[in-house]
Image (tube, rainbow, N blue to C red; front, side):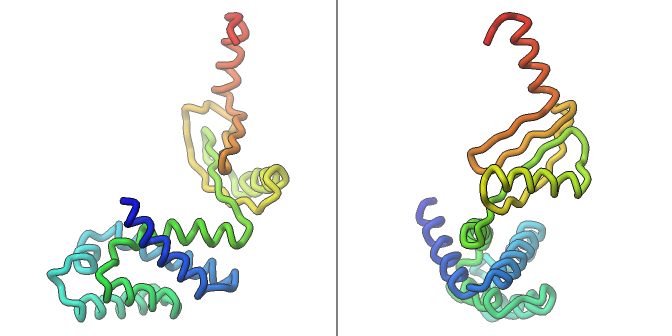
Length: 182
């Protein structure tokens, strides 16, 4: 497993070097996420691209179709062709994840998650991101999750920082105080 991550990290770092401008970093990241999603969403596509029973020429033909379908940049196209030629397409999800982490670090961003009992309005998410940006001194990009068990309020996690303003936690804290336990 460690060798797989090491291999994926090398490809991700090389791709970061190629996609050096921040706008290109984000565009390549979006392309990698779309490709990883397509591979995870289609067993047939994954089979053709990973199974060594298919000749490299067939896989390269599929790459050409993927390039036109997803309108891939030269950097992403070259990576995909290299992965096919070296029979390493199976590393794509790890490469995508590591690339996203490296691109965030290079761009001064940090990713996090905000959970709420009901879906949040986009302007509310933006306000939470702005508040967290003040706390972390970095640009914050949040993924949203709905967790009805929170009852109300929100929880936010950014790196090792966790902020919990949920009604569930407030009720549990009140319950402990009424019982006289810390």
